[in-house]
Amino acid sequence: MGKLGMVEVGIQAKRCLHPAMETMPREQLAALQLAGLRSSVRNAYQHVLMQRARLDLAGIGPDDIHTLADAQRLPFTVKADLRDHYPFAMFARPNHQLVRLHASSGTTGKPIVVGYTRHDIATWADLMARSFTAAGARPGDMIHNAYGYGLFTGGLGAHYGAERLGATVVPMSGGSTERQVTLIMDFRARVLCATPSYALAIAEVADAQGIDLRKSALEVGLFGAEPWSQAMRGEIESRLGLKAVDIYGLSEIMGPGVACECECRAGLHGWEDHFLFEVIDPDSGQVLPEGQAGELVITTLTKQALPMLRYRTRDITRITTAPCDCGRTHLRILRITGRNDDMLIIRGVNVYPSQIEAVLLGRPCIAPHYQLVVQRRGKLDEVSVEVEALPGVAAETYETVARDVAHHIKSMVGITTDVCVKAPGVIPRSQGKAVRVRDLRPKESL
Ligand SMILES: [Zn+2]
Image 1 (tube, rainbow, N blue to C red):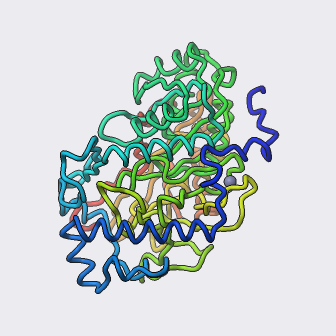
Image 2 (cartoon, rainbow, N blue to C red; image 1 turned 90 degrees about the vertical axis):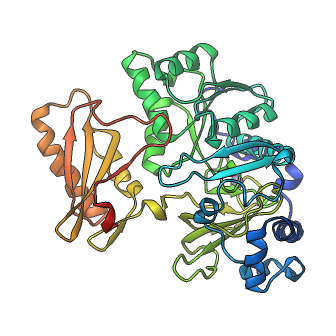
Image 3 (tube, rainbow, N blue to C red; image 1 turned 135 degrees about the horizontal axis):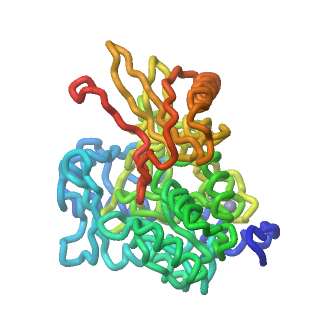
C-alpha cells in the first residue's frame, strides 16, 4: 500500500485491538459502566478522605449508585483539588503500591501529581495500543515518538502503548529537531507521535535540510496534547505526507489514549469501558443533552491509584453516540477546538486561539507559526496577532499581507486585531505544547 493509500476505509477501520469490547452493544456497555462507576465511587469513598467528606456532604455513597444517571448526583472534581491535595492526598493507594508518578509542569502554583498502580499502567498501555490501532498503526510498525519523555504523560504513555501494540518504538522525545528528521528517514518510521505544532516544526527543519518528508515512510501521525484546527490538520498532512489523527487525553484522567479518532476521523472514540463521559453547561453544571456543546466531564471507572469522579476537563466539545462507520460503538467526542482556560474574551467576543489559527492557515504568504499577544489598553483587552511570512515573500508586502489577515480575522472571527507580519523563523517553535498566547495584561486585573 502506498502513502495515503487508505482507500479501503470500511475494511481497514474495522480492525480493532479489542473487537468484542470496542463493538459491544451499547446496553451491555452501559451495564459495564454502571458496575465500574459503583466500584470507582467505592474506591474513592473508602480510600480518599477528601472524597469521602465530599460524598458525605452530597449525601451519596457507593450504595446509592443504581443507574448511570446517578452519576449526576456526584460532586465535581476540579484541577484545584489536585493542587490543594498536593502531592499524594487524592491517591487511593499507598505509595508502595504505585509503580509510577507523573506531574504537570506547574506553570502556576504547585504541579499536579498523578499516580499509577501496575494495573493502571497496564490499562493505560492497552488503551493507548487500542488508540494506535484505531488510528491505523499496526504491530511491526516503526513508531517515532516525539512526545516529551519525563514527568509529562505524553512520551511514556505513547511508548508503553506502542510496545503493547507490538510495534518498534523510537523513544526520541522532543527537541534535537534535525536529528528527528534524520532518524525518521533512516529508520523508516511509518507512524509519528508529536504535538501538532511540533510536527510542523519538524517539517520546517526537514525543508531547511532539503529533505522531503512526503517521500519518507511516514503514513500515520497521532497528534494531540494541544487543541488544533482542521486547517492545521490539512497543513500537517500536506507537509508530512501522512494521515493526521487526533488523539486526546489528560494526565488527571490517565494520559494520552482516553479517546482517539478511528480512520473515519469523524470524532474521537472515548473508551467507555474505562471512562464515563458527560457534557455539562460550564456555568450551571447541568448535564446537557447529547449533541449540545459544553464542558467535557470524565469519571474514571477502573483506575485504582487515582479514581477521579466527574473531573471537569475545561475542554469544550460535543459528544455523539450515533453509530460510526468503523463499527465501534463507543461514543465520539467531536474534535476539541478550545479549552475554557484558553478562551479569550475580546470586547465581549469569546475567541479560541484555534479560530484565529484556522484563518491564518487559510491565507497565502503566511507560515503556520503564530502567537497571540493580549494586552490591556485602558479598560479594554486587545489582541495582536504575530505571524510569519513564508520564505520568499518580499518584506515590502508585509503590510499588505497584514491588512489582508486582519480583514479575514474580522470577517470570520468577528474581532478587530492588530496583525504584525514578521520575517521567517522569528516566532519561537515549540518542542512540545505550543505557546499560542502571550498574555501581557497586568496580573492583578485578570
Ligand atoms: Zn469510528
